[in-house]
Length: 176
Image (cartoon, rainbow, N blue to C red):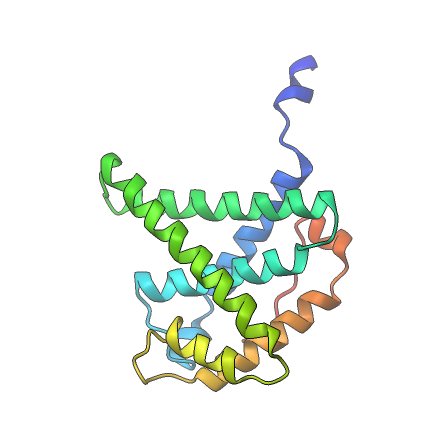
């Protein structure tokens, strides 16, 4: 019993894990791949997983210490998920670190670009260009307008959700 207090995960870590799992589930929605034109590839999935983690980080930003801790837990779960995925596909232990460093840089680049793009909302041009460049991989294919509309809807939906629910790991995503 004494050790239970020491070994029990912090609420933010539990919430972060739940939020990340929910983000992964949402990013795997067939609509993104079938209707919006995101490639069902490692790159396409990385872009959608990253985008949904960014949505959560953005929503929790500036909402106090508990939200900051939960946001960090979401990011930690995201990194662990990427690490686990590399190991599952057989990337050697010596290569995982290098690949993770590269992906971390890519994630922070996406986060910065996303922040810059959404600053201009409700003008959607920058956000649509970002979706075409990242999720649609500059292929000139896919529905960047639909992805951009989804970004806008998702930001609004998350902003409307109670912070307390998010801090418990509960999130409701809009239908893509």
